[in-house]
Image (cartoon, rainbow, N blue to C red; front, side):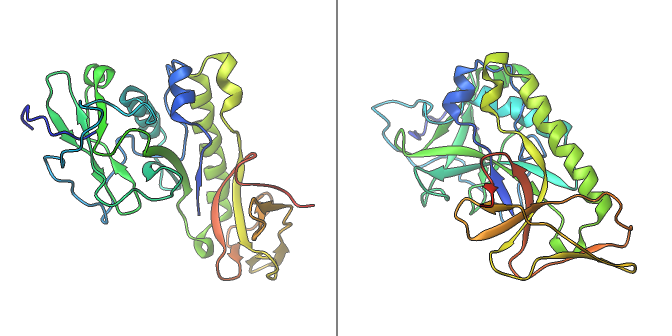
Length: 274
């Protein structure tokens, strides 16, 4: 773009805020809700206008301090690319303050040192598609929203991609290892004093509506019960961390309607059942 200055001001969310990441002074590369570093635009992604609608932000254009700095976003993107997989993915999602979705009309651009603006793709659910930058560009780039300061934020969303009915025991094992490796790489980029702030991942979780008949692994050899030891924070779902050990290759999940897969994030997804 030109130097035109427009006045723009089953997933799990990881508990790492922009302020935490910035304070850590992170040499940080990515907390995983996993893949493609410059998170790939989905088919539903809306193509943003090249010039954002003007919004006065305290009389000048500036990044919103409530949003993670672009430098760290691109560092996280780099780790996400490294761990790109058909089993898990990491997305950045924009949202309005205290809401799950962005406010209508929300747009963002990445502004470079020369004031060139690069539009950021955004799907209806807030999933971002970042324009690729060189390492040098990402060091000084600014992420500029067209919303008033403090009215929006970004979160990281970690997803297990396979569907409940098609998930294989082998995929459970690989997804588990990939999730742990991704989060481990992110922790390794943080100063020791701040690593405790990043939640750990215990594996792949199956959650189903509370009170339903528990899901089972079904195979040509019979069925194996799944022990649901956890519940979601709102207590509306019963959850189990899946263990594929000893399961035959043809085992598949038989679960009630509404069952979902996702990473089990310690302290965030839910707690042990009482």
